[in-house]
Length: 349
Image (cartoon, rainbow, N blue to C red; front, side, top):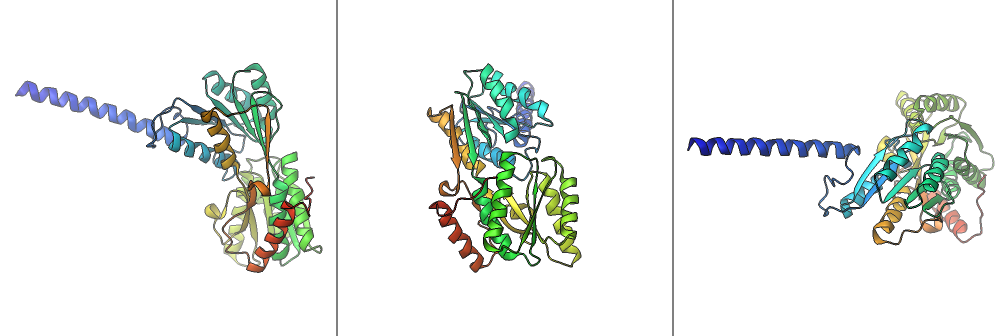
């Protein structure tokens, strides 16, 4: 009896150690740090496919397109049992080693999220011709790279229509992260949309010099709001979070009502409808999910470029429309149809 009791206690202790180890793995998986191949938190059967993602300097929790991409890979893990992992880049110097880390570890597809990763993706793809890579927001000409870009100017035109018909001061602003062709498309479309419905409105564009500068975003927003702009559209990753924080503080203090237009995701979910006028949706998540599944299905094609616009449902405005009147929404729909049928060509720069 005593021997049996000792044996049972030993088995119980061993089981406890095993379960504790599993619990630690689940915690790491939830952070996206070490979950490649573990399939933590999913009921899908374990898959041998592994997908890696390298963020730009905006980080995975940018409430914007890095976060959208990571959420897509998490959904892929849950659906297919594939292993997924991200590496966060603190500076441009991290791009190449982070990409190489996934390639050297035999990942089936390595994503680079953001225009800034273009050169690093090109170099890594050239040096590793048997590896599959993909990039969002840039075109990399290599036979083993799938490039996905968006017609940001078309979606930005629509939120420009909303801004032009909503502003009380006839002064609205745009804050970009870095000056690049991608962000210039946001700016150009926004300005065109405002001008189409309110030629008297002035659009003031400015740039923060980075996607990871919420303090700069807050400071720029304060200046712009002080100058009479009552709506700001930031396309600047984490920098845009500072714009929301400034707007929320002002609205809480009272005085002139100010708004922010969200970007990439429905940012009213994060920041609330009291400050988010609408959001320009950029469906990075759908693109990442689609191309990643092509790897699993065996239909992945490197050397291709996919451009997603209004007609592809790749861009648009958020479904949360609490602060946009039916009349304005009707006008948005009118312009959307004209863009899709080619009656209107939205400028991209």
